[in-house]
Length: 546
Image (tube, rainbow, N blue to C red):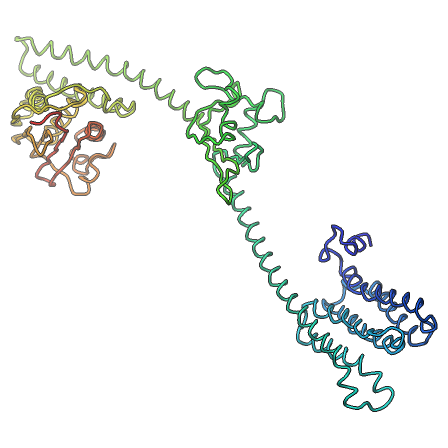
């Protein structure tokens, strides 16, 4: 009843939220309230009319219908059964109209209440409109037939009210159907919106990065599961929750609290855009190191509506980097030091003129394998530390470097019975890192010798070509297929022919050489035919016109 009165007085209660009985009573009340006003007017204007049988019966019938609205369990009946009430409303209207016709004209217009109810229900619109019009016609014609046979003129003169009720019914029916269609659209849009919201919440909770959306004033609008975990890690010790201003946000370099105006949330509120800014959230063993990024959030008119902050937990990544650095430092010492000693003592022994030939051959094998092992260690360390190409530049002569690299490899070529030919022309000035470029040339020549058989020829040439300094190493070795050529510069990739040959290697040398060429603004290209040999071409920009 409280909701019914609230809806009747246009309060917060919505009509569609009422139970079925409440909606039926609320739909019937306008007619009963109007009949009560009619009673008051009749008592003031012509009191004896209120005591006539017709007037009393009409008021009683309307009151009985209101009681029926309250008493009938409409929720248990089939939907639409309530329309029997507006159809029966025409009875009290038809009784009252002739009983007070001389005192209060126009009572036939009371038919508008049941007509609007029927048309506004949205059920069976055509049948309801026909029933309402027919019932209104019966209300205005019934008094004429009750006194005898009316003339055509009398019947036509009473058609105005039924026509008006028909027009009102059509208008209400059209508005109702339009409103119902719009309501269905709104419900469909609402359902889609709820589905998208659920999808967004699910996706945000599934990703392993913290996401928080704040408005222009810094209030949280959305926060996913991962961000709540990071928020908890940044809480001061002993607190269950705290505003952003009290969270422990530390500078990773100094370990001190970040200044209020440089905190990620403050910067985002100020409209700043930033990417991959590193902070530490919290203190002690539960602290997390995060990479923070922020982007402004724009409203429909392009105005700033807030910001989106994304926090990536990089704690484990940094720990892995530290572990890697520690391992590489240890590996650099533990591997390089004994290998250098082995090579040094092997070279000293080979300088002994009294060394037997068989011992000298064994020492050469030992020195060659130690050198190869040191080369692999250097490649692994260079790939791991990212020192394949340094940023320091100095004037170099690529032709001179190529000639020196070929000269340094002559002993290795002779031990393999391979003919090494060097053809370096005039000076080829380039700007680069000497150690890195020499490393590339040594790697290319070493590979050419390693994958060529006894009696083959390896050619090293240097030339000026279209404004580029070119160093080329060609061999007559095992070669590569087209598929292996396309992957020649992929780290840790080795061709099928190389793996079948049993020649040791890790597949890093060419990848590092390719990185060096690219860092120097040049290229490293490969041409190869399986079973016939390979050609590697290093191109670097000339520093002056040749």
